[in-house]
Image (tube, rainbow over all chains, first blue to last red; front, side):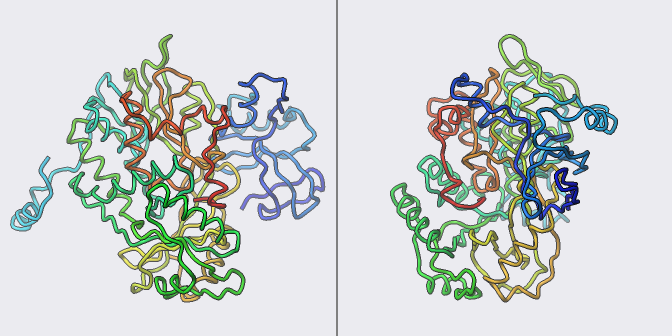
Length: 108
Length: 415
């Protein structure tokens, strides 16, 4: 079972206590964006086999959102951080890079 | 290819079974193919077979990273039905189901199609209303289903508990010509028949990169070298995102783990397929006597082919309420497959932003039933045939155009 440390309440939460919220760091396009950008924002996803950044809700805990970096293939959790973050923190990116040297890095 | 028949069976019985041929060859890949299909699962093999059979395109290479039929084709719960809500869906799923009826004869391979009937339970008022609507839609689209009452459900499935307490059975959507088939045999049968028509199936050979020039696709890099092709057909289910990434575009698809399990074998207790969508579980009995149980999908991206333990618990808890008789059975084994989910829970059979690259994906949790129809439709698309009516509604552009084929609300459940 997946376990994450919630960065909001510092509790180590089981998967059953959380709700998955899909890919993180997606730019929310507005009505004035181009059709291509808007449909890409609505539908297109990275869906990587490997390092993934995703939103989780600590539903049966503090009730707050956070972002987790996880490997979708080995289920290794690299770390979690606040949902009010535009980009993954540098320390976490360095940690992932050391664990996964072949990783291409965080791309939008 | 020597045909399988009662005479070949007799002949081999008389000579210690020494004359059986390999069902399909393991050739070295050629340096170029007219069409390369990535993925030797049911959908990929069916695509190759119908390309050769219906369109005369026999210079086809099917490349498979693992072994033939080792992905979701060998991991599903083998349910075949076509009782969908939307017109586009019923067209392709009913085409598929009707092809299954004679597939053993067509392929000269016994796929053990068993039209034992599929019962979709209605366990809430809303579900009853939704299924009534589906039954009407099915009638309009020429798919034979009927809405039956709780006592008819009990007649058809004597082991069911229709009285609840949590979710009493209020009725069911009964498709008498739905059923099951032997999933491995579907892949093997297509592989054998396609090989006979000249298709090369190359197992344990991963496609590692897609080569493009200014006209689009020009070839692929594989474990066994560079292979040229002008047409690339990606049929890799859960790993579609990886292949799309190689081509340089993204898909409206997320990969999640879907689980299934089988119980220890028991004497025959249930002679149709029962799907309980509200409580999220479906069950049928295999010819060996095992109860084949399908459960829920994880809510997050996952490539582990395992799935979360709590989903097994949820599925089993729900099914025990509906079938109290199974409560003492042991779980024999449990496994997961990586399914590719689209937002509207309908598949994608489409050209892609890269010229010459085609994709067949997004079958989500219900691809097995669609194998023949999907292969048929994809072959029409790849061969640029006159009629492409089956595939046309499932193009990638439907997302941008807001032209969803919404089966997700219709089923109110993964299906």
